[in-house]
Amino acid sequence: MRFLADMGVNIRVVEWLSNNGHDAKHLREEGLHRMPNGEIFTKALNENRIIITFDLDFGEIVALSEGKKASVVLFRLHNTRTPHLIRRLSTVLKDSANALVDGAVVVVEESRHRVRHLPLGKKQAAH
Image (cartoon, one colour):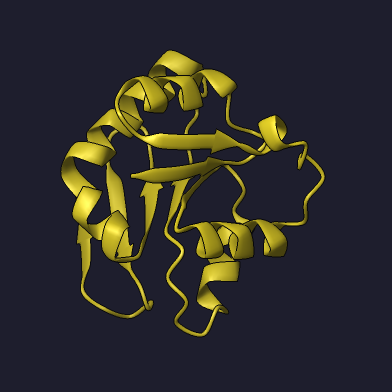
């Protein structure tokens, strides 16, 4: 899968994804650390990448995107240490890879994650 990590995501997450066979980029690597969220969404859409972020604005951007399918993994964690984030992301990828490929917002919490299929309003699931 192809990923684009937002600025709040540690570069080690991108390295972990790459080491596990994914095509992962971080905005910082491309000198795009000041890119507005709407442009990040468009970049992810154009490059067929899944956005990884802590930024709640992406939920609203997806909702207003008129059916465009750039998937988002949205972390809502109390423990934001990188090893914990990678463990949670690993679980999400095992459980929800197909949804992310098809278009979804996956909200990742401490003990569960929720899948919102795109366009929003389709079948919903919690894991």
